[in-house]
Length: 183
Image (cartoon, rainbow, N blue to C red; front, side):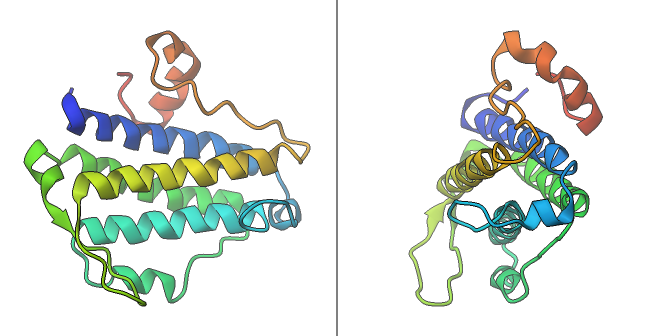
């Protein structure tokens, strides 16, 4: 098991996959109309919010992996009308992020990454800073989706039972289903 900053990012990537599994799993019980229904938040629906999380994840992972086409992700962003379809694509993205984090070292986390932008040329940031921002972005918008889900007939799932050893029994079966270690 990795320790230090590398271990932290691996744990955050696994937490991200688990939280998406729980949230999108709950959203699968919504009809496509409920999933797309107008709600109060930064994005106007669960559908828009969760599709936004996916496209930003894909963009950042592409950029972190040095893909020069990362910015093209926004040319035709995904718009999955069904939570089950979105779930399968998000899970593939989550696994890609986990694999990226598992390959990191303290040295690679300190290397520079430039995030392409259409309107400006930002200075490079460290890989660690880009990952920290990506995880913050995911948590921020998942929180909004969680609040929107509370306005439906579906009970929002608990999303903060991941890191503490005493919470392992609450997530063990899901971690196994996702193929993630029970660390």
